[in-house]
Length: 372
Image (cartoon, one colour):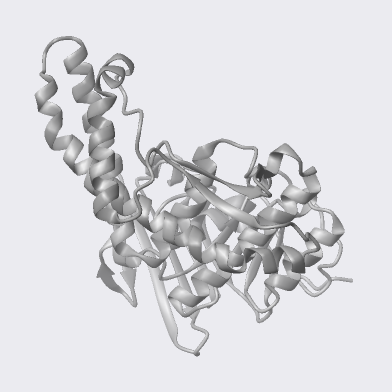
């Protein structure tokens, strides 16, 4: 898929922005820190995933002192079909969002993934040494783009977690009974099983070509395994549901003490195991980054296979963190994709990129300039 026009209205630092994109796969957004480069990529991620890749709330996405934002893009599919996508959010009297495909309103769960994207942030380079939440989020981003059912399960699960936590607080202070947890435990087990099963399936798909991708990038590791870490070992969705329900009952006293749910897919983790050792236990920083890139490329292939479109690639200030070999590997892997790159200075090897100079606000975004 290709984007050939981006329009923002009251979004972050852009009261108005209208970019008509010329042909070319590489688009380089240059500007100092805080100029608004990331805001453009973030807006595209909102269209793709229904939420900011930085975790910002809806109220933070609206230009200061305004009550709404609008993001609209004009795209063309790999088959040449044109399509408009639009997201609108209003926060008066309360936050309301609407999504449109070809100017027809659609549910959020169906809209998500219509514009497939791969997002790569500087913190992703430390994927295997960072917090488990970052690893879970990587899987969830991909799965939400290919499965409306997954997004529904994840939303329901997260809402139920909050409701169960509130009930645990009431139980702790004596204003509710343990028996009241039964309904919430049932919902968490049912939706949690769906989430766990889909994550296991995705890791299985990535596992199939992981060794080959690592070798292509120069790492000849013996038996690389993507290992999902969770409570229990059930292999079917029904068994996982029963397992989660049983575990919720087992840890009830601990959960009341913590006033939080201590087991479930929101606590799960996964990692890369090489010859029965976790990657961070022996691999250099460069080797770990190679593994991250391999996963990124495999996720790109997965999205293309599932959506029938090459994902748009959003690289936010990561080139400065990569050596030339990794930069070249990234550009080669996504050579036939549309790629947006943000940077404070022009990286080497991007002579063919369309360059945009970004300053504060929409009026300071310049037309593309040719490289000398």
